[in-house]
Length: 64
Image (cartoon, rainbow, N blue to C red; front, side, top):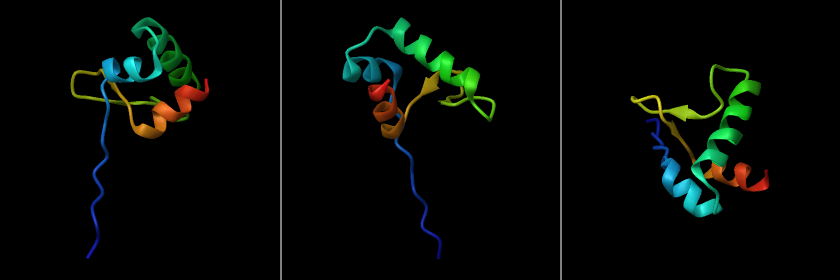
């Protein structure tokens, strides 16, 4: 039987608090990465088309 793994997504507000950056800065970085993405978007988007982030995304943004 296959095991299903749920991915935990994190809101923009919590990402900004974690990284201690302004939402406008996060949007700028996310837009730059979306432009370079092989697929349509680098980051996952919710039903309202807002970006949602994983722990791996936050770790990568922290390095930027």
